[in-house]
Length: 209
Image (cartoon, rainbow, N blue to C red):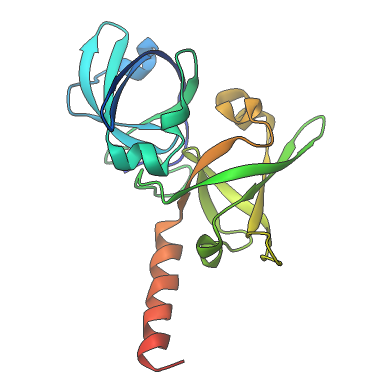
């Protein structure tokens, strides 16, 4: 489990390609390597990945076909930076919200409103994901626990959109400060919200409503 409180960023220093498979090698700072062992779970831009090799500060992670298809990790290059969160431990403070590290889709940044002390980002999600978006609800954006500020319903060919408001600390600690319109981010909807929505849909379907 993760909390959506990003602990830092790490640089991709090598990429090993195979058929429908990729290994990322990150340079992890010492603070993020403390106690790290083979098989440990580490979130990259909100995607739960498993440590497969540790060689000093260079830590490797394998990405399967589905991960490359659904998330933005397949677009990373050597020199790219990713948001990093180590798995939560029993007794840790949950400063964000409970997250599984299972990305449900990618969203495109379509609008950016920058102000001196904050920034508002608007994202567009696939139409079928709109039912999970609620104002003031939780959402994971590239592994960051954020609160949805506003939701715009789809109109015509326009897909659902939502915005988040970022404080300087979030911009300084994560990669969202570097995002520009057209970039794609990983989205994880709040698991409780997803469960409630899908349960209500099933009940209504059984009643023919």
